[in-house]
Length: 596
Image (spheres, one colour):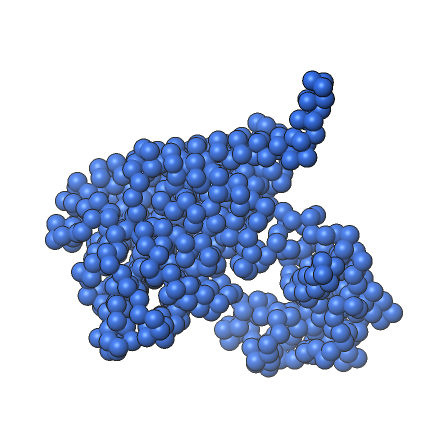
């Protein structure tokens, strides 16, 4: 009888998979504990840096976030110290990053996303330390940047180190990477659930989650939040006071505000990357010195609008209290866009979550106050728009509608505005579908190199192109078409890719809007160029009887979303087009029919 007991225990243990679950429980909690300690270290380092480098020299006396601000809270306008210090901080950060760990530049969340999708979850050991110090220098010297990027790299960096030591498989390494990032973000923003959902959600532009990692992220975030709260105290970042919402009177106003968030979000993203690509990248000096230029320009903005310095959380509290004029808040929202772009697009180290929260809050405050003045029956509680703007704006620009809603509620300790947060976040997300603040995001799981080998290869191998798409008229372009006519045709079409054909109708090339964008406004060239000069001549084709797995492989290899389809007997005559979305639709429709 006694000999049978161990056998029964082993069987039960094996059936319940206890060893595997206990292993992941231990790893997630360990990563969370270290992420929480990293959040404590970064937060303390950052507070001391801001206090010593900015507050004392400029005579600032910011109240603790979560308390009511008063007149002594206002910065000293016109202090040239901020210009000097921001320049010096940018220089120090640039020298550190570009000499030791270039991947630590910019907002670190993108680096974490790229590590997940393309590097098997691997992060160099030195990156978290470099990111921590460089971000403290950037933000501590007055730079307009946030905490989520640095803390995401700190947490994910330790997770990657642990995975290497334990010789985990790439899939396990990626899950642990996300758990580390989630723990750090959940801790430092006092938003354990929001942080646990933000990291699996931010990987994709579509409404998808990396669902396999959610439980590990939750466990890590719980532990990190507990460690951080034990050391720093447990409190909401903001104190909104008594916020209210009138249902359904204010719903139309919040819907309009969602559109405003999308418009300003588009401007934010285009400014952020436009300055990087068209200004800082073209300055003919080594990259390590460019953050100093960005710091100088940011300092010049802060000279007149010192509210844009660092995260600006205390100013958000001031907006929640209704102490700003709507015009001032509107100006501050756009000044924050410019200051953040100068700081991070130049190569400075820091996150974009904090600045985005600031922009959304100021935008909400301006909309609420102005709307209350114009239509008090529709905008009954103007200060509530500040809190809704915090989550709704970031939901659109970062493609994280679910986690943004939860984080805004957790950061303010109030779920009263959950309904308007949901409405504004959804509208902002849908209107900004094609752009994102995180350029390393991929569209969905099927687009991620991390899941290429996991996307039901057997199922796709049994599906064929001719079963997925039908023959249909395709907009083709004659290779002799003048460039001006080409621009007119492409811009008026709803399609994305355009096969180029000769007089006989045979396909000789293919082009997209991106191929003509660079020379669209060059009048000296447009008169000389025809469609054939712009098109890509080496066209990769998908064949009518080819499998969807082979078609997807070609798209992933070329990093395109659509390819022309031809018959094997006539490879120059286009039949139709096939896109990744066609493959996704076919895959899920087949999977659903199997499951039912």
